[in-house]
Image (cartoon, rainbow, N blue to C red; front, side, top):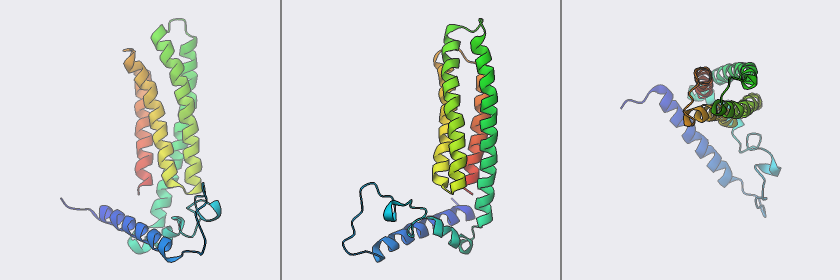
Length: 190
């Protein structure tokens, strides 16, 4: 099995990251210092902003063949896609409200549409949180947020599957969100 240049670069970055963090942890002990419960980094700061955090490693990416511009481009793409997801979800929720108000909507479908309305609220919130995470430079959290969007949409679709009341409109919208969110995740792994 041949390893691609991207795979080798990712392995190199990971090894460097762990060795750098381990070396900093080992080489700079302070007398009588013990980690405070709940503290994430020095003085309770976030690890990304701490001297032993990850943000300083972006400075060494060019020497490893990874361009900062590629990371920024992927983050910019993901932000725009998440904004599109949020806007489409808000628009699609109007369709759900209309269908819920329709007297022709049956019991199982009505139950699932009610659940989907809640799931899509969560998905829109997760998309906004993902944008905030990207803007803060916390791409790990952004990945979790984007995955949460996918889970929220899938939970809606699961309701229809379990009720054996497949809904083409929900399925098509869910597939679109899943595809765009998947593209966001790929772009953040650049």
